[in-house]
Length: 373
Image (tube, rainbow, N blue to C red; front, side):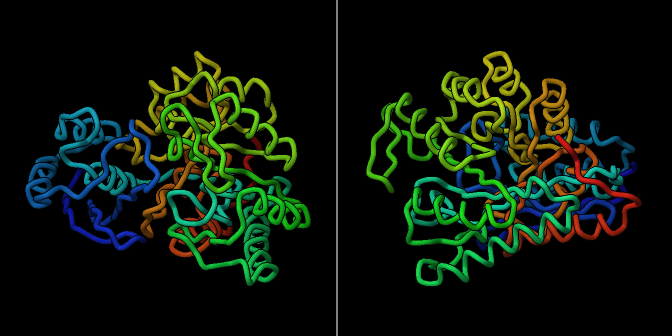
């Protein structure tokens, strides 16, 4: 695709923090950001002088490039290991180029993995960061989304005195601790034929070799943490567990994976959508699933390469939003193009942009189907 025009501008995200929007040939890409971020992620910030960054990237105007060539040029213009020069302008530009050059949609749609109750770094009273639901038996994307929204609404209706509002991902904040939350959620999830998942985000409360689970007043060793997570898996029939250990602990992730081959043990901070870190996980038997956040690695091309490696090794890719979101729905399109079987995109607030995009695409697709992982 020939780049006729390229512009950058500063916009705000769902936390009213500044981020970058790129416009290429009249198509837009917006950079999300995370609150609970892995130390190995690409940097995501607004460059101090955005005009200078725009002038730098404008050198690509007039060139005819593929997505891979464009992303390679962006990385060369940044010229750092972690996008510490151009920051959020990198993924915003990569998204905009993808939108401008065109998206390929398969007929295979992901199931929505929805964050219905939240805590941890995203705001709330639990140490576990996200309590998720997955409508495992849904036969269509609209049906799956209806299931998750029904669970979300029923939680609000059944526990009005325990709901304190929403956190920055649109998830409900409750007065309940982790175990109470799981008990309440399981009753409702079972009623709607859905399964429960967790994003533990354990790195956020790992300190001096201990997991300081403040909500239950426990300081757990890695082995004790393994026992704690295993009890939750067994008691609440968890289908998905994300980041149950520190972001550099491949060994404990491997132990949990070996004990639970039928559960998605998912690495987010562990892998940060990085092909090399995923390869290390594969070699160590750590996890059987991974979160895919293109801004973690900085470009669409590099995220795609990580997805391809994951699929070749039977890891389940879960494409995901960030806590500091925008109305950009590129990941919804990529879920179809890359045939990722699950999309983690919240359930309320600005995150509906991604879910409604998939509803629209479902209606526009001839004989769509749910992607069976």
